[in-house]
Image (cartoon, rainbow, N blue to C red; front, side, top):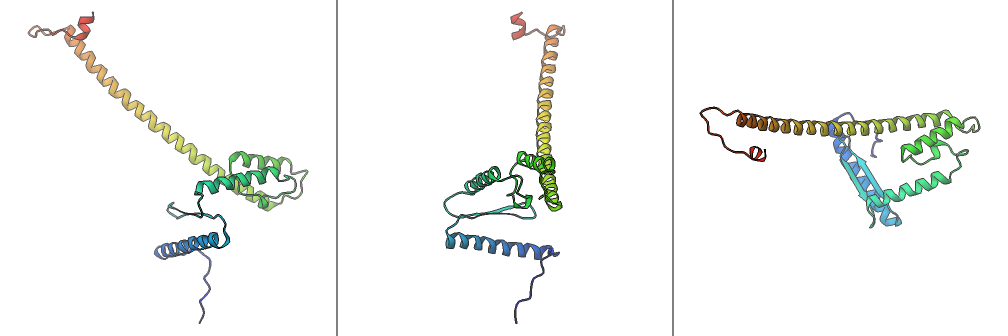
Length: 194
């Protein structure tokens, strides 16, 4: 009796999904390692779990950052040497920056009268990439705003503490300038400077 075919859809049971993720992630890393050894190639693998935990694999002596940098350089070279008139969005490598995304939008939207090879699917992919870029921009904006709020709150706290210290000093100075009749006056540094 053979194995039954697995239907490719999301596993609804949370614990089964976690077990499957763990097993398949291990298998994927094992296959990546085998591919790098058997074929003498560099392999970088990044996997983010549903909870956002990062799992990575990198073959050879290079680090993951080195392989990603090499990928970026390759994709930039491919992007600059490609003919914008004859290349569809599906043929392009994934965009690396918002600048490249804006250049792509300009190329396909403003130049669409000259180039009839752009179809609806290309624009749908472009829309998805723009949405993803907007999500990243909004996330970064939120991070910067939160950092700014935290900095301002810290400055406010420091100013309040400084204000309280100044009020205490003013109260002390006022008490020294107007001493009680039964109290003996002590010379202070401020009074000595006057």
